[in-house]
Length: 382
Ligand SMILES: C[S@@+](CC[C@H](N)C(=O)[O-])C[C@H]1O[C@@H](n2cnc3c(N)ncnc32)[C@H](O)[C@@H]1O
Image: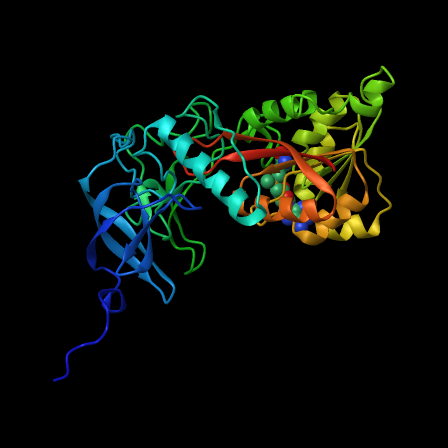
């Protein structure tokens, strides 16, 4: 029989356990490793560690793996506060000391900005306490045995909640309701978790979720880059009176930033795709005008003007057409809130092509114990 000419990477199969040396952290929070040259994205590890890992997917371009044993640990590794960390899909940085989590996020943000936009960022990821008990919106599921739990990583399997509950859930957030038997047709038969309602007065789908970002946004409006003007400064500031400017809040959700802009004295128009969110926004910020529909379509269709534009797009980013349409409005300042450094970097590159430069960029650790972070970029005409 002829000897096999395939490499270990080509022979690799899902379920195989391999020893790997972890290199740099990548976008998405996984470490890069190489199996005979082929890239493997490894979760639950840290840069510099030697680990034993199980392959969870093997593709033509790269594979994925999860650490099963740490052979040589990083100094930044800690015992996760949650006993189901590594199995639950909610937190992927529980095994990392909080300061090191922020450093890893900094490296990802700086790397994406450099790689995709040619921008050098030397900022830090700012701490936003608490590191546990911050999450106000939770979606619980039921295990086949009828226990409340959360989804595992990249699977529909449900990991039962530990006795103390989810460590990142805010103590005041509604916990899982009673698990009950459901008989609504064959597809929906089984166990389900009754949803508890939030406290009355909550602002809707995303309202109370990110108070720290609200604070960050207000800081942006007050002092975007330490030098450049925010709402109530600039033209209006030159007139000596705060506010009086026209502001657009794009992807406005329930109107978190629209509220801050209106409070700063701006005449605000918000645009949001979800009609339900728009209904909440209208109740939350009655003094602003809200349009329901696609940002790209409404920017094309409506005759809009703006001195200030704030945008907080979903992870997919705004895209080059929306960025071009924003630049065509010639706002004096744009505040871009982003939860994805890769799409942020692409959009900043597009803004650069349309005459807007990054005046400041801050990054907040709004989602400790996960690889996610929130960036706030302030753009000004060049
Ligand atoms: C990151 S959230 C922004 C939340 C908002 N800043 C708030 O505090 O409530 C992104 C929002 O964009 C909306 N969205 C997504 N794609 C959209 C589109 N193409 N046009 C308009 N809105 C969109 C989503 O419904 C979601 O509310």
